[in-house]
Image (tube, rainbow over all chains, first blue to last red; front, side, top):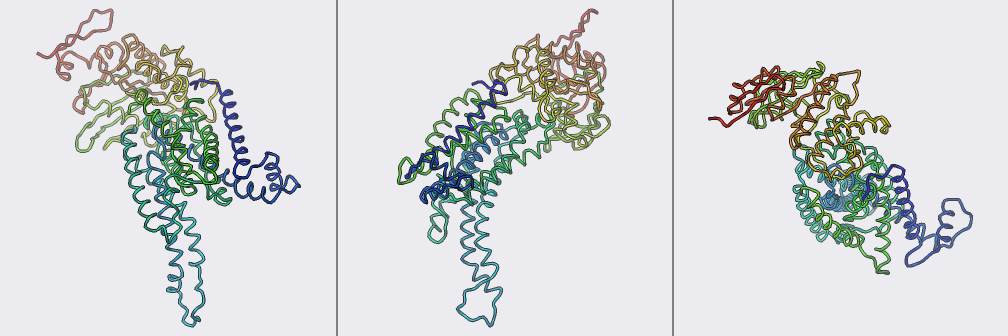
Amino acid sequence: MNPARSHSVKIVLLVLIGLCTVAISLVSLNTGPVKFTSGESTQVLAYKLGLGSEKPTALAETVIWSLRLPRILLALAVGAGISLAGAAMQGLFRNPLADPGIIGVSSGAATGGVIAILFGGMLVKAAPAIQSFFSRAPDAPSGTAPEGWLIDLAPHIATYALPILAMAGGVGVTFLIYRLSSIGGRTHIATMLLTGIAVNAIAAALIGYVVTRFADDTQIRTITFWTLGSLAGANWQGALLVAALTLLGGLWVLSQWRSLNAFLLGEAEAFQLGVNVQLVKRGLIFVTAAMVGVTVAACGIIGFVGLVVPHMIRLSLGPDHRWLLPGSAILGGAVLVAADLGARTLVAPAELQIGILTALIGGPFFLGLLLSAKRKLSL
Amino acid sequence: MLEARELTFSYGKHPVLDGVSLRLKPGKLVALLGTNGAGKSTLLKLLTGELHARSGDVRLEDKPLPAWHTRDLAQVRAVLPQEPRLAFNFTVRDVVLMGRTPHIQRGETLRDREICQQALRRVDLQEFGDRYYLELSGGERQRVHLARVLAQIWEPLEQSPRYLLMDEPVAGLDLAHQHGTLRIARELAAEGVGVLAILHDINLALAYADETVLISGGKVAADGPTADVLTEERVADVFNVQAILHRDGTRPPYMQTLPSA
């Protein structure tokens, strides 16, 4: 471990991590049931972006442009989002074990997502009845399909309720944990982890109940989607939305690196160093939990990435948030692209849940961290 | 001047401070002494703005503390916490550099780095810049944080004199570094910094502090020039011990304490 490396060395390392991310994305673009050469995939990209005139085959165009590219973009955004959120939460809670999955933020978001789908589905179903109740035209010929603003709007409300309620669930849990585990400006780590256990259990019960009870009549998705995650549903619209929101939140989090460093000393110490503690704290809680909420709405809970990635960056670049935050975002993208590549190719033609892979690698990593934490941290 | 007037504070129903007033003038080293649970740390937290008094107010340069912008305040006033905790493995240099936070606009300058190196030299850790914080001993960590707060108020500023508040700065330090820390506090006072330090050792107060505030049961038992405050009778009374003051005229007076009879 050498956090004492000079700035220029750290910049070079960041660029190298970035190149790895690009490389693994290109590999992922070419790999799958249908294999392509880099030349073919470049041709598709160039053609679609208006840079090349040579028309690719219809198969290449569909698979690369419509299936794999949005999925890779989603993986990059989700990986960057949860890794950045993990790094920032670890700063906020002053503890390297604060992973959005472990402390329950992700399952809070998933609960919000499930509830949004449940009520969104109910709303869409009930919309015609509600509409006709309020605007019953007495002379309307019977048998015509009911119409009105509510019927038009209901599917959109249902669509947007998902990310919004997921964000709300994540933010709510984060506030709860902060209130419970922060005592006098210091984080009580055991309380933080225990709160996570309780929240995860409650969320699992709620999700399990709603999903099994209403699975037939709404698009509630499967339990494994929520608990183990999947990027299989990726499309351009969703990927671009997640990428845009992640970029927005991520840039703000990156701008807070100096405050986050001061936060590691304790809340009072950060205040005495001139940090507006309340503003930064609330902002970080809200933005990081919202970022987690967006990713959970898009692809379920993908565990341990927010724990492992920042830790790997700390080992190579040190704990300074100036380097930790961008490093985590870039490496997080690479890790998730790689994990998703594994998820869709390891047992082809079937697909693995991506959370199975991240948990298989991240779980033992977490145990190792706990072992070393017995020495380094006061748990 | 940092001035507290008639501060009252309680944790729940348990009163901690009852009408405490205190003045810290620039250029003075003031020791804050008292028994366990007398309210010393609470008073210090009220003086830093970390806690807010039930009644009474704290003013810095005649402006109430809450009216100060957090960053402006941090440029002129540093606080050394009692038990600094940091669970992340920064280099010593980076921890000290955090002290420059309120002064840095965009990125730290060469001057900020120079100040950090000088601050490390001042606490006798000049070779420790590249070492890892978590690999240091407790006393060394304490001195890293001293260097951090020194770096925070290293240079005089136009808008206000500087202040340094220290919560038990010598706890956990070996004898040489106890004296080293208080000698630094004295030097800062000579530079015009107002320094307040919570101490337990009466003899360190006698040797270094211009003034002493003695707190007992949430009230000020006595304050003024240290030699006038720390008399045999008062120490015996407040701390419930026998106290015998030895003077030989050349060295600072020395107070021997024995269990109360």
